[in-house]
Image (cartoon, rainbow, N blue to C red):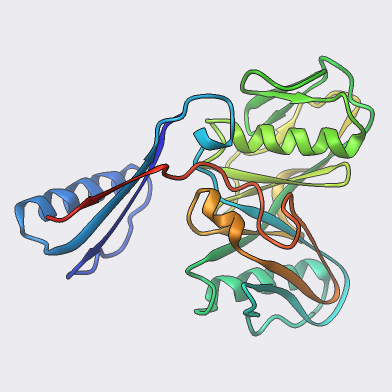
Length: 275
C-alpha cells in the first residue's frame, strides 16, 4: 500500500498531541496555518512510496528487535548505535526489570529520538504447522500455506519451525490492518507480538483460535521478561540502527543481525516544500 512521511521545521511548537482522530485534525489545522503564514515554517519535507505489491516497500513499519531477559543480574539493557541508556539495574524479577529497561530507553535523550521500547508482548510457539492451519492475531486471521505468500494473512509453513515463525512474523508486520498497530519478531519457533505504544491492550488485541500446531503462550500483550525495541520512525531506514545486548541474562533477537530488523516502507522520492 502507498505510504508517506511528512516532516517539517516550524518556528512555533506543535503542542500536545491529543491522540486518535483528534491528532489528524490537529495536523490538518497546523498545515493550514503554515499555508496561510500564521505559523512560520522553514521547511517541509515529504517522502512517499506508491508501491502496492505484497512486499516490504509497500508498508511503512518500524524496524524492531526483541530483548529477552532470563535470570538477569546487575546492569542490563541494550546499546543503541553505541549509546547505552542508564538506570536499568536488575531488581525483583526479570519481568520487573524489563519494564525498567524499556523505561530507560524511552527516557534517555541520547537515543529516544531514534528508538522507543515496550514490554507488553504476546507470544505464540509454532510446532509442525500444517497447510491450512490458522491463528487469529488481533482480530486478523493468518493461514498457513506451502510456498511464498501471495495475499495478506498468509504465511509459509514449508520450512522448519523457526522458518515458519519467521514467515508468520513477516506476515503480521506486512498486514495493512496491523502494521501501524503492532510489530512482530521471531526467535527460533516463537513469535513475539508487541504494541507500538506503552499501554494496556484493548479487548480485541489478543491472539486466539489457534490450530493445534500453534500454542498461545501469552494471549494478550502482557508486561513480562520480553521487550521490543523499535525505531521511532517507520521505514527501511530503521534497519541501519545497531543494537547490542549487555548484562547478565540479556539476549537480543532480530531479523537483521546486530541491528534493528523488519523495518519496511519509507519514501522512495523526496519532495521539498518551502512555504
